[in-house]
Length: 192
Image (cartoon, rainbow, N blue to C red):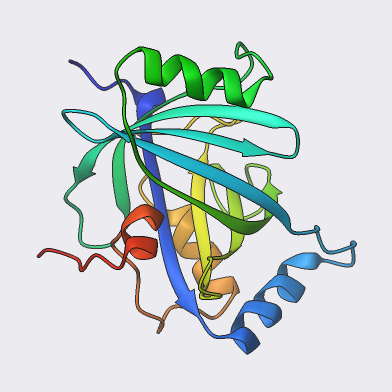
């Protein structure tokens, strides 16, 4: 299978303490009301390569295939194919549909998320999303993801937009998390 530019996710996750978490939210605020946190329910199904995620948030449903991670020292990249606009709004019906297809639920968790979206030119050549995530164990992460204008991931990323956000928030000395949230919540260690 060929991975097209619109099917590649490029992001970093940064674990932070409460003080850094709140200071970073305020730094991005730019005088506007801080975005509210909302629950985001995630159900995972194993596939031969990667996994399928069913997500419910703010009345929306998103189905995402995530392939295996593509090796990179700095950014997290993986094949990602998402569907949102064409899905039924019945979350339970989709869960049943996946079960009928023979997919078995592998794991489930709910996190709290607040998202800031920035247009191209504010931090670099690409649109980006900065998510503030609180995991079920209360650990806090800042996730920075490069996007193209319609919200689809951009494989032409050189990481400069992400680097600019990291610098703006003063997070360049913080360690980058290589695991996805599924592995973090499960407590799986990163394999070098």
